[in-house]
Length: 162
Image 1 (cartoon, rainbow, N blue to C red):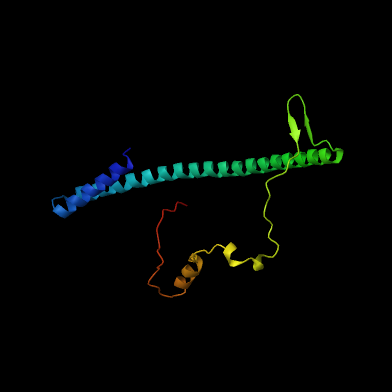
Image 2 (image 1 turned 30 degrees about the vertical axis):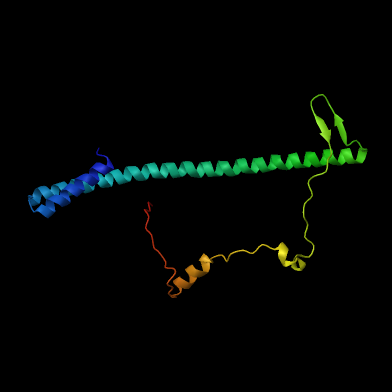
């Protein structure tokens, strides 16, 4: 069986023959039929591989989700265990000690900022930002028939296999 680029090459040669007008009508039709048949067979085989790979990716996505859920559960357990240990150390007053394998201590974290009244912040503490383009609004306006010199809708194409 020919490779897909060989089929395309054969088709291009056939087009070249047509432009040179040096061909036998029956031979041309037989060659064209053969190329079309090979392309259909090749396309069907490609579709089988694509569907198989899509199934693999679906399985992998669900496995990723399952593992992410498991990871989040473990992270929740870690957080709860640390909170329980922290609370036990605070209540007992034993905020620093060592065991054979580990050292434990409660220490101050870096201070974090908590804004109380954000609207009263003086201007010298604000960062100015450039305006951001609202792509969704522009796309919707274009769909509704508006015409802009700065934007247009582009309709692409892609292969669909059903």
